[in-house]
Amino acid sequence: MRPLFPLALVCLALCFALVVPAQAANSFSSAGEVGQWIMDYYKKPEPERLADALKVLAESDGISEDGQKLIVSFVGAALAEAPKAQEGFFKAVQDHEKARLFAIPAFWFMNNAEGKALIERAGKQWKGTGVSELAKQLLASQSPNLMAGSVRTSLHLDHLWSVFFATGNAE
Image (cartoon, rainbow, N blue to C red; front, top):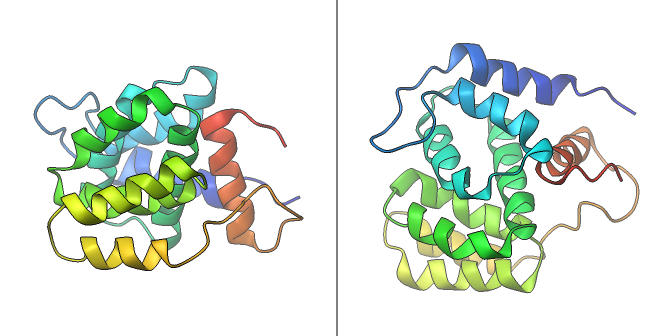
């Protein structure tokens, strides 16, 4: 198995290179703080902070495309484990333009009926550039079952690490 090197690099980049001032009433002061929180999330889940984390990361420049994918798989896995937090998360990101574009794929990564329903709802209720199109695109494609089968690519392995950080599931 490949070490956590790529995911660790993303987290280190968040910790040291992407210092973003916190938005008003955000529970994180920087993207680096979010990165550290993600790595410890499975030890003490705080699903009520997922929207704040996503808002900070969505505003951060310099996160690679693969890094963005890992963020949405982490958030999706965490939301799938916290059904009571899903409505609060939906409402908390609905007015944040960039976070909405991360939230919709996170719903897709939930890989369940609740995630699909959140995508449908977001596509109808949320306004903004690309929202409706992204929702339609994801609804038309099968959500990935990251836990099925063997590891297929290095990105798949990185997504599995995201699931681990969200759930603590060592599988």
